[in-house]
Amino acid sequence: MKKKPELLAPAGNLEKLKTALAHGADAVYCGLPDFSLRTRVNDFSLADIKEGIEYAHTLGKKVYITLNIIARDSHLSKLKSHVRKLKALKPDAIFIADPGVLETVKSIWPEARLSLSTQANCTNAASARFWAKQGFKRLILSRELGMQEIAAIKASLKKTEVEVFVHGALCSSYSGRCFLSDYLIGRSANLGDCAQPCRWEYEIKPRGHEKSLIAGEDAHGTYFLNSKDLCLIERLPEIVRAGVDALKIEGRAKSVYYLANVVGAYRRALDLIAGGKAKAALTKELSFLKSELTEKLNQRGYTEGFMFKGEDNLQNYEGNFPDSPWEFCGQVISSSRQGKHFMLLVKVHNTLLAADELEIVAPAYRVGRIKAKGMRDAATGDEIKEAHGGGGDSRVLIASGQDWPAYSVLRRRLTKTSL
Image (cartoon, rainbow, N blue to C red):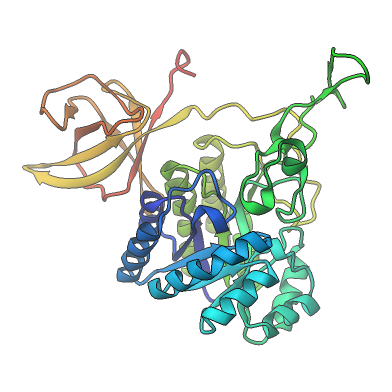
């Protein structure tokens, strides 16, 4: 078996960064809104990035900074100051797609470790060798490549690492280079401000008339640009055998619940593969993890994308798939022993009812059952029957016969009336 590839997870804020690392990510990637292709759903400041880097390094893990916009001159003038500040923080690598950004970083921080963003659309061995000569130590290959093409590119490189996406949203563009959002409403995907018009329902409007018709291309519906989500967890043995150095999860705008489930599932899968689990048993485990990611996360349906050339349908013509029957309801902040039990301090997200059927997901996708009956308000100590997250900082205490670490997440099964 080849060496275990690095598992990268997205981080849209400091809490998400710590959650991803707790659930098994070897590294996280993040950035400031102006330069990182996430300009709206991004809560990072330089102070947060500094804290995140220091936190990750105490765990022996890494933080990569995204500077992967397709820049204009106005961005490059601001970038110089930003790179100087980043240099002092000592992140483990910088993601870059634009040659102008590359030259700016090299001029200020020539020792920086460079990773080529998928936005650069590296699709062949000659291109890979070109970028390696520019100083890139890792290439994040185009999402449109097949497994044989990826393996051939990897084999053509001597020391340069190769990274591929294995899970998350896909878009109707070439590795993210889309102009549709900019064209329709003036929000550029290449500057981190995509409005995701590929997910919209479209209408046909006759020229010169105000009335419109819903576009009905076929019997499936009208969402003709809406890609399914990528999920390659069952294909990990083949990807690992190809010698890929790093596996990337997409989703900086996703919740801590998404990170706990997806990162944990892929961590568990990679550890099972590295442990030499028998093929039949491994196949069963990977199938179980795929079913968990299908049933217990909201998603648009899963596809294997372009990496494996089957008859898989990339597009979801029916809009979003039905919501999951499970809902994220809390995250463990801390745990303390009290007699024969452990008392979990839980930050509430959404709704949590004392009568709920709950599951708790700990790092490496360790799943257990827990009861909220007898939960107490953390501030007053009063027993309560329900708690609500909303926009506040609602916290409750829940007794457990088993210890559960910080950053574990709780989910509740929704009843038919709550679906």
